[in-house]
Image 1 (cartoon, rainbow, N blue to C red):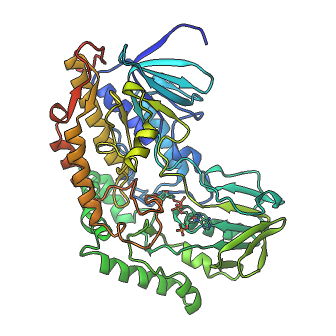
Image 2 (cartoon, rainbow, N blue to C red):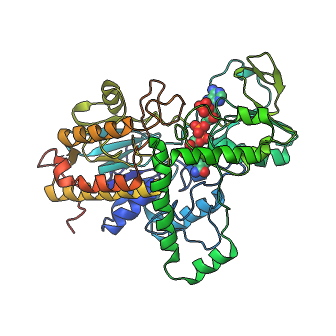
Image 3 (cartoon, rainbow, N blue to C red):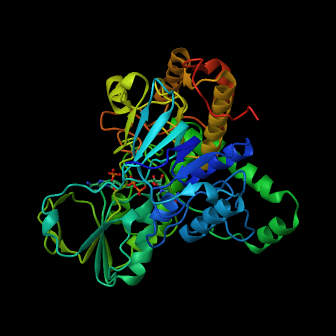
Length: 501
Ligand code: NAP
């Protein structure tokens, strides 16, 4: 493809929470020449893609928001998908990020040139975009996973994934929902409101804790509106609570037992039927897979037109789903609430680093995907990522983890500018990081747990989740000064001008 050469100091790939955070941090550091490439039509990431009925966030908005432009509403504790998406759009506008944004542009490959010491990104249309540094902010939960089931082609109704909702589908008939994770739990009460019948196919139950009300009560509302600093104090309180109460559950710590008792009590209170309750009681330790916070899922399952099926699915038929016991249940619509290909980092993207090394090959040889605090990989100079391997927190604020990663990346870019060369994590820093990571992972309930989780491979390798608290992430990353953990690849290379102005 010919045309003017496009060249930037930094290219960010993805305009979800990670991409917008990185863009804001770059702007804050004085970088003007950066581009955000987004494969979709707008900012928003998963909050643009997930439009299923009932989609909302089970993390309070005060935690689930940008530090540089926080969501602070005296009424709303848990905003819905539309509100979160609107907020992200407003953040992009308010912070002058739109002029940097190019939508409908998907990157399929990235090549590092050992000669020029720059990156060339290749888009689906064959366009080449050159950059001194690239930050991938693809997220972890954006490639739908639909199980390959026998007879799938024969099903005559509508079938779609939870993150690809078909808004033209008629939901008044018989709906089958496959999966019982966070997405399923949020949509099932809404579907039960409009459908003649809902069949829920459960492979394994989730531990569910009661969720505080979606809106603040009158006194909290008054206080949040009138008491100066209360929003900040409240945010600090729930952040601290998530780290000190929820995070230890993942390590079978002090709060695991009380949390399990609370989850059992929640189930007992909401489901009177003993058989149904038994089917909804997990046979694994709390924390092994993502804990749900929900008040509407269990009551929805107790309705007469909602059925929970625990037999495995054998195949799809023209009219519905047949389970291994030979029962066929009719379905007009099948919703795959079956999660995402989260463990396949950079699936569909070819990344070639120093010496022509392919990132996928490198990770295959190493036996797992790994990145220094989920943000940098040895052999890939000035290539960074947000929410890379082992940096998803199942217990606290992922936007906060992303903020720490983005700030660290900006420090690496500044170091690169000072040294006049692309930077790369040193072998020693990476080895020491992996050693600490593995020791922390070994203490989690995921490690020897029996349950599947989207952050764990079938062979037991934990690929996505951060095993500690967010404060531990913050402190660990702060202790790993880029000056010590990163080294320049070649002193003659060009580098982003960040920090030189
Ligand atoms: P998920 O947690 O991965 O759940 C997928 C569900 O599908 C599981 O119940 C799984 O069963 C089931 N499943 C997968 N393959 C199946 C098969 N072949 N047959 C039958 N069942 C099958 O996916 P998700 O619910 O979309 O949530 C993913 C993540 O997105 C969450 O953990 C969370 O991090 C995020 N999320 C967050 C919110 C929020 O409010 N913050 C809302 C939605 C999603 P098994 O458990 O047996 O594997």
